[in-house]
Image (cartoon, rainbow, N blue to C red; front, top):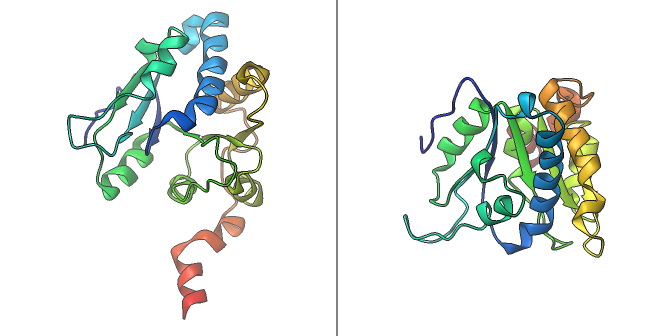
Length: 199
């Protein structure tokens, strides 16, 4: 695998493309986490974010698009960005090994992140930050799983940071009411369910 997680830390993982269209969501996530590190540095100093496979460029030639946003908040020591693409089954393994998953969404209102389905099935604490019109939010609501922040492009990111901070804290502490997906509600998104529809 492209990274080995530190077992003494809370390892938060996103595996997928980066890009400037994720900046709004990233500023909400990092803005929220910045609040937590200032409020309780002793607790949140053991948290580390991994953003993996963020560029479509050839191996070793990708440009960082996540780390510069983290640097805006002075959080670069909490963030590792690996631009090289990762094989699909390695991604699934990383999701299962993570302590928590995070998915920043595009500012494009019509963007649908198909990668949300493996994230759901990994069954790990999940934070999704998406444009309020994204279909991803409906999927997460349907399965009653994962903390979400729905943002509007026209409002400044710091409008949402306090809410995001509270949801990150709830997920890390295990106090969130949406930590475990409802298997019955999740069934329509499984391979078995979709295979039944096809045949």
